[in-house]
Length: 155
Ligand SMILES: Nc1nc2c(ncn2[C@@H]2O[C@H](COP(=O)(O)OP(=O)(O)OP(=O)(O)O)[C@@H](O)[C@H]2O)c(=O)[nH]1
Image (cartoon, rainbow, N blue to C red):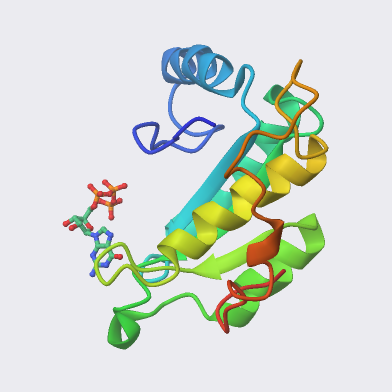
């Protein structure tokens, strides 16, 4: 799993040199990734609009079977909300991926989101580590399915 946090410009923006630099960085980030978390800020419309560009970039650069997860962060800032949850639910549904609203500040849904992505990666890989025919103890998260169901999630 790779974390995209430091690569902030969406693909397709900026000048040519900037785009080349972006391509080099993203290619390195995407290589071998099993899961990608797309994060927007619910108080920032632009960050939500950029998600479409990231989806496109993932399609072009990542492995075909990569698990994706959409997160709307800063859900503790309801008064400053610019992106309605329904829009993200719709987007996630269109792309066939899960969606959570999270808050890194209050820890809302953070564990649930990471567990959900890890679980989906495990399920996709048959619950096994590559080259290991025995399930390692403690990595089968399927038992958490019901417990982690959240009002903020789209499963
Ligand atoms: N209220 C609130 N603030 C948050 C949350 N997550 C991050 N922040 C704050 O948002 C600011 C930016 O956080 P970073 O972790 O640097 O994330 P970033 O990707 O640089 O985010 P932006 O600057 O918002 O584009 C910091 O002041 C964080 O404390 C959250 O869930 N809720």
